[in-house]
Length: 240
Image (cartoon, rainbow, N blue to C red; front, side, top):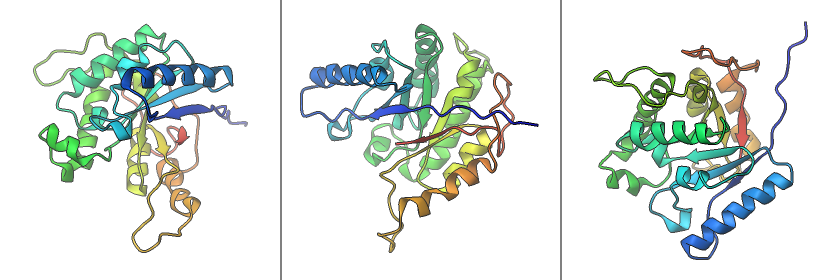
């Protein structure tokens, strides 16, 4: 028996770091996304960071709503993992944007690296992993149409978004959480080195992560809600 293998897709990732004012940054980034599509890229990933201009501070969903190119994707740190209202700031915006762009949106979440943003949102940066897990569950439940405490449901529900979530991580534990949730895995070429091992290669650090997440990869299960998590339920790997 032959097992189908998902085709490799090439994505374009950017943070908005041009030395220009905000309006010019946004204009240039939209041009970059269009140019990437013309070069054959399958998706456009935009980093979302709050407050910090030097980190490309940007409300990514607002920006992506202006993009008409490729497959829009938001690699979100703070907004997806630690904002006070995951329902309002992420679940609703993502559900509406995805419908407006014809079901092309992909969402990446992670704990983020700007610890001062936690203080701005009155949250504890030492609990960022716990917050990520909790808000991830909120997003999945919202998109799948399950009610929050109080009984209301997200409008519009968007169950297909559940299968288009990836988690960013720098460690094996984070990779294992992504695989257990049935999410894609996002790795970065800016991976920090462990203390005392500044010369450790990127492959030595990251090669164990996909294996921890998925084991031996199998085709993802689509439109099966609630999802069947666990190693092998998904094999979507993004490397930036």
